[in-house]
Length: 303
Image (tube, rainbow, N blue to C red; front, side):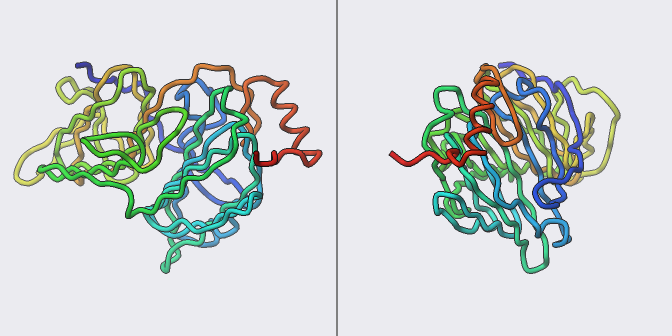
């Protein structure tokens, strides 16, 4: 067994997308090999409706998959194929854009005007970039949650974990997508297949993701349940943790516990030609996609 080292810990950066949605980007539009097969990760969390209600009007996707996970509020969506619906708190949508789709995503928030969710972009291998588009809409009630005796909770959105399998399937990157809560002061180890690229994204509380038996950094001490806990390399809200190779991730929760996404996938290791939400293998394919978009042939007829 080998614990994955932490390669980097970086805060997500404020940015604006769509028609003026304020969000935080953990990674995206940089080196596509860094977290291959994943290309982009956004945290859209707002308490002010004016910062998100303008939403993400009609825009194209080709050659990728988008994964939307809603924690609070709702997101109304529609597309050029006639699909439409609403994602609520706890719901997940996995959209395989494949050969091309035009869609819109309009966050509405909850009764208190709050909106919180995440969107992850996963690349498709060249052999599947022109596959037929499809959706997998999953209600929060369908997502299994496993609870350990020590209070650790894991929602299994994709992949298999602790004997439970997530409801989303047939994904090219064979990913594992977990929503994890670890109680205050607890040290926990999670298995991840060695061949996968992996990252964690903290969105509540804080934790150390370094090997707790050989920590580094600044010491933070606080009494938790009558015991003194020492947390080093503390990663807090809106922090991306990128891991090296190994088959385990070790987490030591901070004095208020921690909730984070733990995501991994098999690298595709193919060339990337990227223009916004269109991701192909070559510049020629990218030019063709843009030409298709301009001449009205971007949407392929269903077979």
